[in-house]
Image (cartoon, rainbow, N blue to C red):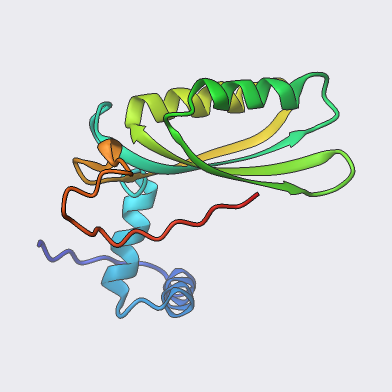
Length: 157
């Protein structure tokens, strides 16, 4: 690691210290490193398009928009191999929030997210990517091969 000297004004330092305390950082350096990773886009995205990742796709949409709910469902069914789970929340009479957990190759996950958030009637969308281990996209069930991997699974209806 390199040591860097940084000069910032008192108000920014106070905001940094408050942020570090609120988030539970051990020191300012950790808080600054995380802030830089986020600002540079390094906190979210795996580097290679074919790198395995896990992700959450959050989006808010107008469920009254003609055929939108059906189109969104079709998109997810068309990519069932990437979709791990979804949470659907009714925010008000006409607005829904959906949070979908995805797993697969980064480029495929990004493509699915772009397809969802660009649908007419989707008001907001955000994809949060996290690098996954090399075998994350090949994770299969039903074949123990003598190893207990200890996964816990929650199924909702």
